[in-house]
Amino acid sequence: MAKKLHFLLTLIAISLSFFFHVISSDSSVDSFVYGGCSQIKYTPNSPYESNLNSLLTSFINSATYSSYNKFSIMGSTKQDILYGVYQCRGDLSMPDCATCVAKAVSQVDKLCSQNCGGALQLQGCFVKYDNTSFLGVEDETCVLNKCGPSNNGLNEDSMGRVLTSLNGADGLYRVGGSLDVHGVAQCVGDLSNGQCQDCLSEAIGRLKSECGGAAYGDMFLGKCYARFTTSGAHFDAKSNHGSHFENEKTFALIIGLLAGVALLIIFLTFIRRIFGRNGK
Image 1 (cartoon, rainbow, N blue to C red):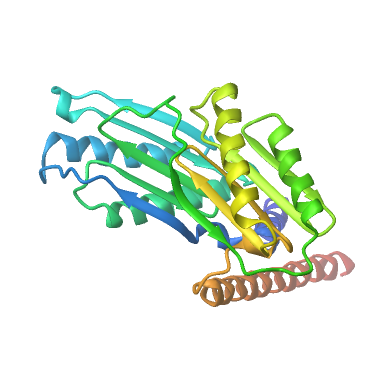
Image 2 (cartoon, helix red, strand yellow):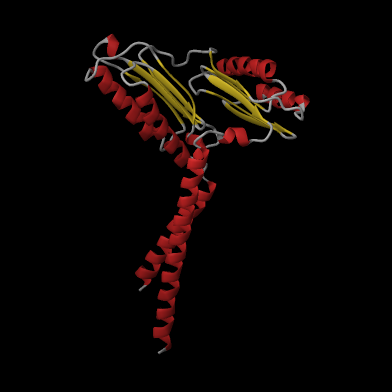
């Protein structure tokens, strides 16, 4: 009887944990920001393709326990060598990180089919691979620059303070806020602290000059990015897929709630039977 009671309590705990995970999870981390592929192609069924499949699998496996990792895969010839890196946004939980990286791997594999190199940025994570080494190398090439519509109510002093605080902070992942302005910045983990600071200084400087007075601004360079918004909603990925993600989230929420209620009813029925037997 004790074993049955323990089993039911475990089921309820699992159901409730799933329910609260659905509430707190942010499906927008999987939404697309940008992607690109190298011009060089590899031969199908070649050693390079085998190494690439191995690398992408390593991304997915590693992301279940680490928010960042880099890989170098050696081949029998120079043409088969492969380098890769993935990274999740600094505030993501490990389950969300793993989900994001798996989604990024799936998308970059389709986007860059038979290309030797590919890079993909989702709202919550970044993946990149190439047959030319880029690990530990600074890259301040602008890959995405996007400014929101003019916001007449934006306090440019607040925006300046937020971006200045991001520039002066420490670490690869940085957040800041002042009044209604929120900012975030991050470097890819293969950069040194000095390289990261150089990259973010460049990104923040461009963001200030090009998106001043806008409702939001994004500046993605090759190895870092800086962003700001006046509401925080922009970081939650305003995209055409938003309603689709919300529908999935609502459906999962309902399922989790119904499962929890059903297990609670079973548990209460089980308890009532036990007390009924003891009362006889």
